[in-house]
Length: 112
Length: 116
Image (cartoon, each protein chain N blue to C red):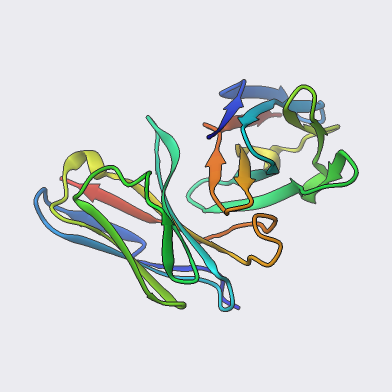
């Protein structure tokens, strides 16, 4: 079985400040790791994914994430946020069999 | 491609009525997922299909819920009878296998269900 824990349910931050959204996972099998973003009244969109190779993954909108196998973490970062980054962010894992498990989400609120 | 298409976008119904949600995945995708999202429970995977075959339905809450995928371009999620606690946003997503498990999911816009 797999589980995903997003350590912060709400992250308020001022515009142009850096941000880190934390994600830890557990799994008895190998998994692939994803971050999705959900804007109000919309479906989820992929931000970035880690499949293999370099542990630092760059995604859209200036976001990046680092896979840390020993700590089973996949934290999402952005060096300078914009008002438009206000959204809910989901960390997810997926097995080779295709089953996905999502975290509870982190609401990022960027204030002017 | 138009992306994942879900219908209806909104549904309001009375307790006890049958509800059918529809999904058209992206053409060529071989995985299809149904999720439910609520404030209380977050995003829950209900069931997913691979090549039209249900692979894991352990997330389906109870027998009132059923899902079918009669062909590669269409899936339904049915709730019969519906209850107020079924009120949620239901998302359909599809993805392409190949390197199994390595491909992103594309989400539809969701169906917002309200059961009175």
